[in-house]
Length: 275
Ligand code: KIV
Ligand code: NA
Image 1: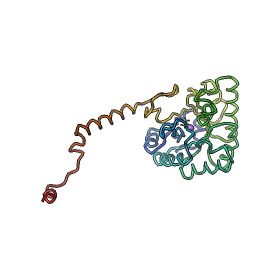
Image 2: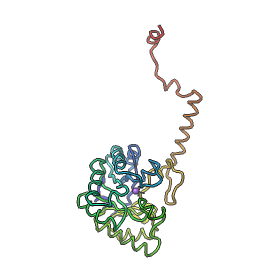
Image 3: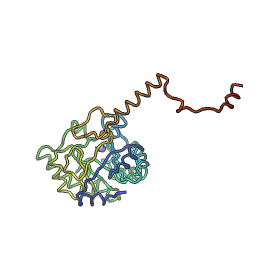
Image 4: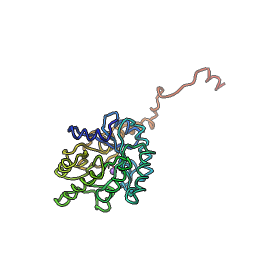
């Protein structure tokens, strides 16, 4: 399994880091089999798996529950779990307890949290307590209500400067990795060059130290509309619907199950049964 220092080393060597979300046993198993460098149990869970219309309703217990399943599926892959909405903004002791539960009960190797200056002291406290932290800047979906929608962040010089300062701040506070979501590629490049820690982009262009995608977006599973930054690398939903349609048709036609899918009694038992 790769560790925090390996990701730093990968950046230094110019090796790109491939990160993918996973939410359950099969998705984690397949992500590990395909060789991703690390898995994110994202709170995108709420949207792509649980059907909420934002990440706000996701609870700490849900994140722990799904992290356990992911770790069972990918025991040899570094797993980062999102701290969900409003679980790292109060007392630092509460933040610490919440993150500790994600590691101790869930089995995650690190936590991720959204924001810069406003959570800087929480990043420092977690790191001091021995909990590796991934920071997340740019579009931070837990703040969708404040941001007024899912929009590209840091498009003006002033906004970009502010974001760059926040990126330096979270690095200073101890984050070992930064996820940058939905920012102009030019800004991502600046951030990547300014930081020693790896910068993982999603909707942030190619000039990052690595990329992260949502599992369901990557394989085309239950997705109706792809954001601009997603490339669907597979289309499993078409295959799934095709398979289910065939099943329904064969049940209705009586052609499934066939003899080969059925169990049988021996003749002598049948004779006893019928007398
Ligand atoms: O929850 C998530 O999947 C994420 C990634 C989009 C970075 O935070
Ligand atoms: Na997230």
